[in-house]
Length: 456
Image (cartoon, rainbow, N blue to C red; front, side, top):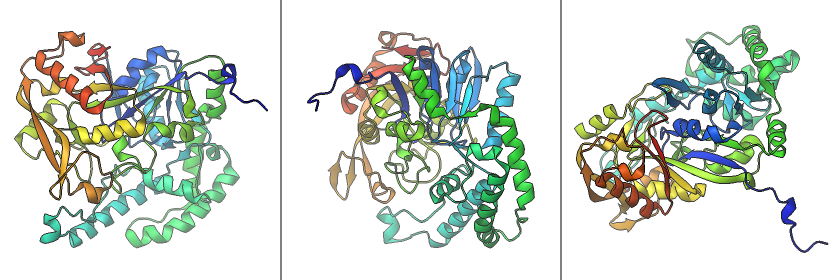
């Protein structure tokens, strides 16, 4: 038997992944768009139409929800992996919007194993959120419990796009519909019949006024959209491995942020998928040993959409000012994002669980004009100083931020093209992040356009 591995038989890392290090909306779309130039394919491996990536090219803004950001590069392959839950109608809408703007989408491939988000998933998602909101209002803690930072039972704050229910069906198996099924009439009819039999009693109980789901109508709609998308559906795992055998480089695009990861995020206020870098393997079939670069994207401050604790949140005029200047309104929903000072306890944790090899710092320009900056590098919990992030909502709600003060900078940054051109205050801020997180800042973004980016 051989006693050592043959180096020639071990594949060298040839892939990169872009992941968010906060609660999403970090600017991953811009970074994917930037890095796509050096890769042959861009692949989404998790999430669904609940994610929204904005990319600005020569002043034109593109909002992408399911299609990988690399689609804006002619000749690049764009792949939706098996770990994504696909709303086929939203995908068709997105394809039509890009076509009207002259974007070539012929390079899009959709995994035949990706699960479909159907209309009843979105209905279920909204009704569940309404129920949780109502229960939360009735049972909100008060008195001593509230003072101790207890988290009430409340709505999760989903986008109501059916993501969680679709992932739940995937795990429950019998009624789950995959993209390949949309082109198999008999199999699709059987799966939909099971799904409706299971869901109708629950939906009727939650919303008796809603019209009943009719199998013929649901089936016809699903088959029609399946026929539209079927030319793009294939075994993307084999497709990607064929590219790797040909020496092609692949860029993986994470949706949502690490703190929303279903296992490692601030549970239960999380999404339904694996957002961190380790999700690449199960989400695409490409093993993590292929990853040579893990680029973690973070804002120069913190934001969050939806419910759940956020220790550094600014519920004041300053928070409103940052929100407006940073255009902190959801790409998918338009909801105003919650805004706060930079939470480095959370970022250190995310960099650790992702194995980040580099950091891309975005939105630094938004902090220009502030005389003083506050940075959270530790928490105080029950009188004790804590530097480790508690990824459980009920524990995190008890954390009080411990701030360090830094001088701000007055100069606008949009015209800077090299890191040494940044004003002294901005340079100190970047260097502080590198020291605290222990990962080099390789990219600094000072505006929405491709050109407003510094790469070390």
